Length: 134
Image (cartoon, rainbow, N blue to C red):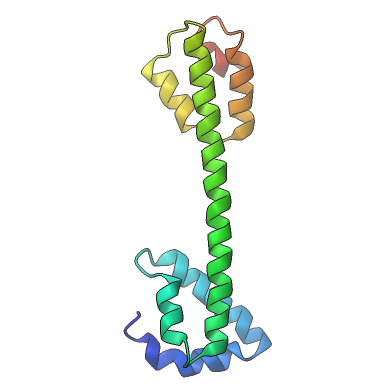
């Protein structure tokens, strides 16, 4: 895709210079950035720089948006891991047996509300598996 990009710069720049075109270009570039695991927007920007400055500016905006989305997802995942660790630490500190199945279930949960509920239950549960009972 990068090899063909220089031949598209004129069309991308023309598209980027219209109000509707910017929206379409944004959608296209967001798709390309998310679908292509080995393609980075910085490479796109380097090719567009100078030849398609308006399209290059749209690419920068997308890069910032994707970076912010990635940070938000990373924070949520980090919180879930921390909550899961807290549930496990509390269960073990209370001397309860945490089986591999219970540990996997806790560690695979990504829902903050569920993990919080399990943490509260871990404080009074008679057995580790009791935290899952609804």
